[in-house]
Length: 250
Length: 76
Image 1: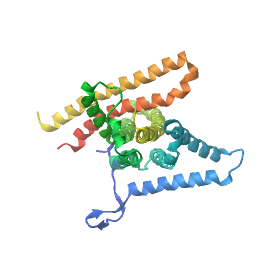
Image 2: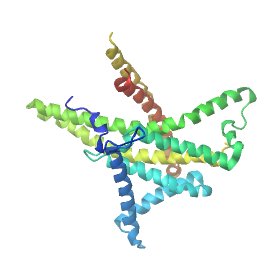
Image 3: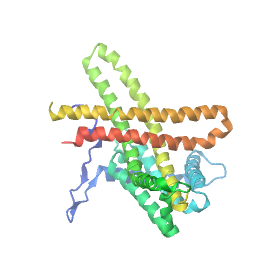
Image 4: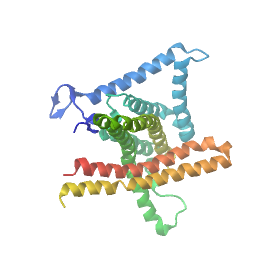
């Protein structure tokens, strides 16, 4: 197809193919953009923190707002003892945010539009919740699945539902980010494809192509909102899940 | 009916589920706005909760989108 909306998600080797013990470790465009993401985060934050003036400049304000947003989030949800999880939540938030925003540039690869990336991040968060919960509370952590004040007759069912809802967390956390980025980028390319095919008609088609063009511009604005919002949601759900590890009895 | 037509119909049916997510997100932000207009002082502190609720509701709609995409591109 000429305007294939799926083509943008194709992974291809930049260097390689390399193999170790039957596992492919080629340097792909996905890996390249993960590297660019990390380099961008590090570069922007280092530049922002370089001056450290009392009255912040533009870049320093960005850095302070970025830091302050995550700090407030961790402080509100996890409280004082959650402070040691701040670096983790900040890293996750920054990685997802910058990867989403970099994906908005034309011809750039969106790292978070691949389910393997988002599912790995989500699985890491949920495994961390289990490990921290058991290290901190021992077997008492499993009281998370036995809520207080529930009549004994329906307790098994409630526990079952709690366990299923806990097990579905890595799936929903990973799929939410993946689905949002994938769907958003497909919709953008579909509307861009309408513009091209209407222009090819000529005459009235050129006039008509203004409508999908306006829609594509509006959708781009929406996608920037979604990019920020999904990074925020990913970080705050990480906090909410970590809260279960720190305070299991609800 | 050949299998590819059934796949396309199935993908279309799966997308109906996203309507439910739309209703859910609309409910959450509608009620948030109604509450915020009654008590604007408390609105700021509850915006995060509104976002969490919207994300949880939206995630279920994304599931049906993923089912549709699986039917279109993965199912043989």
